Structures are given as structure tokens and as C-alpha cells.
Length: 127
Image (cartoon, rainbow, N blue to C red; front, side):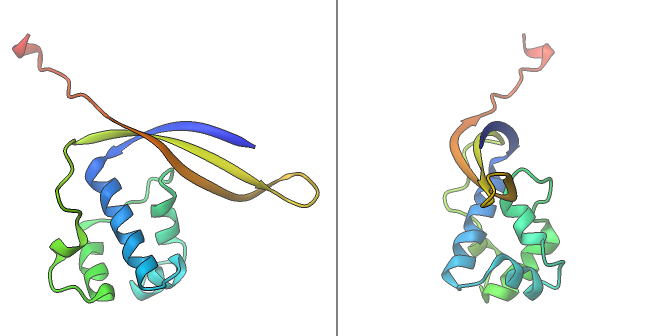
């Protein structure tokens, strides 16, 4: 079973999530292991990387992540160049795995298939 959804989020949040996932993969850490190294609940990083959950990394998490990945500057956690847009709309394909009996399992794969910028609204004073 497959579902296509759109979510709006900060482009900086999205790029930070991608960057931390790259670092996590590079250091061979699972989502649970990174959550534990940050002294957070086991499912925290998984929720952040899911993209459809409201969980995101906060300013506090940057220090924890810098400690885990042993970077000298929090700036090393951010993508360079900085994102071009404030908000973006992610179009996600969510594919649900099936159990052996053919029923959908709780496990799902989320894939970003399109990214569009949200155009800023003009102030009524400007028109």
C-alpha cells in the first residue's frame, strides 16, 4: 500500500535532519543508539527522521549532537550553503510493508519525491 502526502516544514530543519542522518550513518549509529547517546527517549531520532512526526531538533539538541559526533563547532552540523528558502513543501511517498498474511504492518518507508519552496505572502501594505 502506498500513500502520497504533502507536509510543510522549514527548509533548514529538513537539511539539518538530512545532515544528522548522514553523520549517523557515517558513524554507524542506529536511530536508537543516537537517541541514547543524546540521553533522549529511544524513539526520538526515529520520529525526527520520519518527517511526518512533529518532532524536530531544537537548539538544545545541537549541543548534544555536537558532543556525540565530536565536532568542534555546531556550524559543522549545518549544511553549506545555507538553504535558499524559509519554508518548503515536501511531497512524500509513504509505502507500508505487508505482513506475511497480507495485512499492512506498522513499519513504513518514507521517501521524499519532490521539494517545492513556499512562496512568501506579500504584505497587504506592499500591494
